[in-house]
Length: 64
Image (cartoon, rainbow, N blue to C red):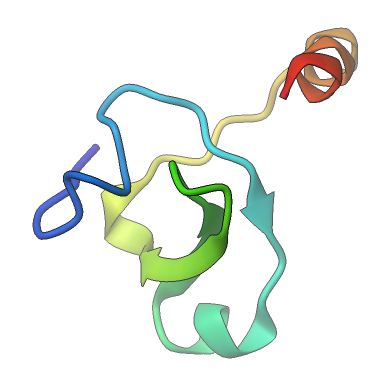
């Protein structure tokens, strides 16, 4: 949804893998594997979580 201050790390309208992070969720953040291939905490308001059908998620994991 947003990439303010993170244009190099986050592309708009792109699906990103999310890793569970208890500390992040307690602080309004979400851990995302960004364009660098590394995981970082970003404001959770920058994203909309979507649930993909299992078959599609499995296919995407193979090509990621």
